[in-house]
Image (cartoon, rainbow, N blue to C red; front, side, top):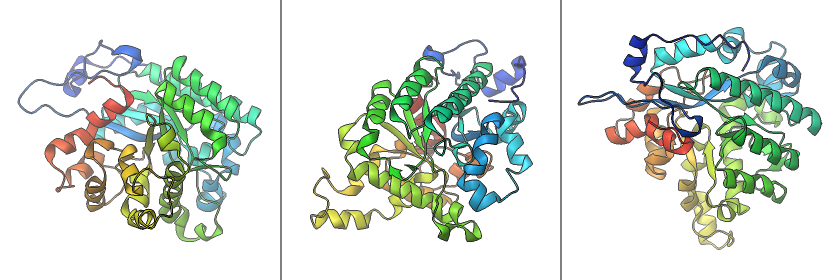
Amino acid sequence: MVRAAKRRKRPARRSSRRGRSPSGRPARGAPKLARSRGPSPKPVVIDVHAHVLVPEVMKRTFEHSQYARAVAGGNGVPEPLFQRMTELPLRLREMDATGVDIQIISPSIMQQCTYAFDPHQALEMDRRSNDRIAEAVAQHPDRLVGLGSLPLHDVTRSVAELERCMQDLKLRGIIVSSHINGTELGDARLQPFWAKAETLGAVVFVHPAGSTDKRMLPHRLMITVGQPLEEAFALSSLIYEGIMDRFPKLKILVAHGGGYLPFYAGRHDNDYRYGRSPQLKGEFSSYLPRFFYDTVLFNPDMLEFLVSKVPASRVMLASDYPFAEKQPVEYVRRAKKIGRKEQDAILGANAARLFGIAV
């Protein structure tokens, strides 16, 4: 990441308050947090949805983004948001203020998607971004875990860069959009990518880069309607095109609670009952527990409903930093129909298992 601050030695008092081991690190470079002892230890809190920008890359990609066209116009990224996505000291202070121990950081694909570029140029930009994210994680290995990005419109280049991200940079996966220049995620041309992601155990974070539909232009509908619709398209493609059956060990995390799909899967199930989707190995909704979901749903009753449709073990805390939930821990606690033990797991333990973080 850019504007990387010099790593400062954290006072022992602060490490103790956080319940961290100042020197202990888990295998494979993951952060390791020691639970505090006592009758009611504080759950480790892991935020799985937190964006970063690499300015030298974003300067090239921004004008091509749907965010610029449908949301920002000619105004660029508002400075307070830009600062939070580029300045590590500010990020760490705000993590402390909101009770977040670890962030899973990923490029903000809304402003920094490379799919519009020639594949060679796109790979150059994605590699630069991935290197910066790895540098940020190396400076704060107890606070940050990284995801990279890929030029998925060139599958061969993407497979090679995914391998570099996982093996050389020690990132834990990558972020992808809900479609690749109109190519759905379940398209047969992307199968080598999915195969490599499964083999490497990479977490694939599906987060839309935006919608090109002109109906999404007024009233910020690209954000309020377009994003959850894109996630519904993405999951539907992965299920109907057989990706989830062909690669059963895939780790796919979906932003914004999976979008609209978990809340209206009954129509898909009805089609299956009428024999209209014979390629499926069960009702459409039976595939939903195969995915992982974040908590960016804004209303606690929506989080409660999601947990009624998929196991709580597949749901994990997220803030959509710096755009959305300002009190992510409190938000999860307000979902009173979810038991305390399940809430604790949503706060951090579920993400720890998914990303291989020792806690």
